[in-house]
Length: 92
Image (cartoon, rainbow, N blue to C red; front, side):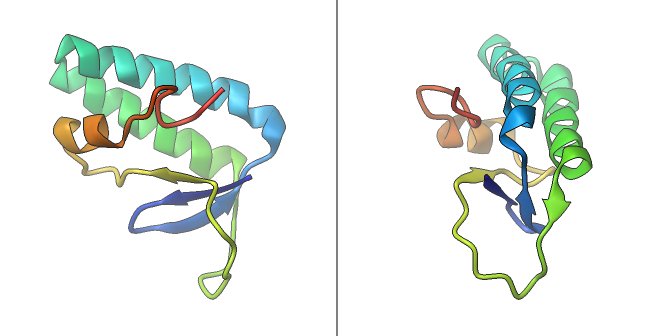
């Protein structure tokens, strides 16, 4: 699965890692629903750090289609709220 972190590029994620990413996504959603800015910021960074850690960065000139698009680390809570789908940022 190809994931794009806005402003950073693309990363290839093994489907086996989606469970842990989905759990972090759920925590991020909970922080947004609670309006907890501090928890939101921490959970967003946790999610992006995990994607970077488990994923394999694709070359900048790669033309792969992104299956998921994640917000940048400096995104506001409102910006991320607008990106959330019915299943959060990470479906599943």
